[in-house]
Length: 112
Length: 116
Image (cartoon, rainbow over all chains, first blue to last red; front, side, top):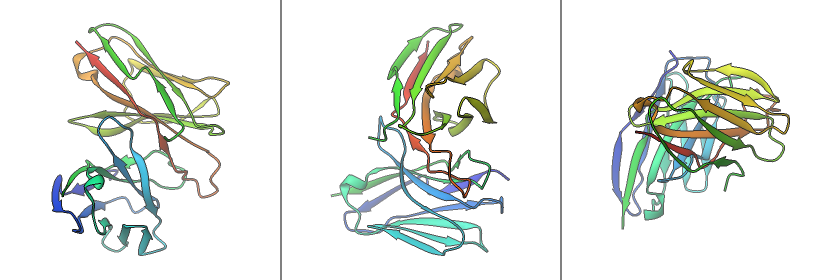
């Protein structure tokens, strides 16, 4: 119930491509869905987050799509660049719960 | 730079030993969280403190303990260390004042613990 399932485990795209990372959850109490980016040797850094009252949110080249009925959400990276090569984690939480439940991560490689 | 600092950056110790990891939250943040990141378990929540008091507990072993001091820095104590405790330990902080109940968590750079 508390799990967040993330796929794919790894992804390789060419520069300019649009990698898509998917996450699914079971607990309908979740109401906060952030995405974190982690570079080797660094801590996770918040990229973008969404709440279930909207179906899409864009920040720069990063877009979250949210499907409440399917209990799924995804991250799209437009015009991907080699500098986007990192591990991406989806997460979920709910009001009053505070702790983040993380997906297993997706290692993205953007080739030049 | 998230504004969260963690020391030490690396720690190498032997089985059975005890270590202390330290975290200083962002200025003004009242909540501190500890997470463990390992290859097989991913990022797992350990424990949260809010303004000096324990707020939530996750998958934290009895050999592990934490506290948050009046100046809001936090320490994670790991004792009777086992090989399987080797992992990255992250501290995160948040304001703890969100009316929606879920604050953005800002992560520190982590402490890499190696148990030999």
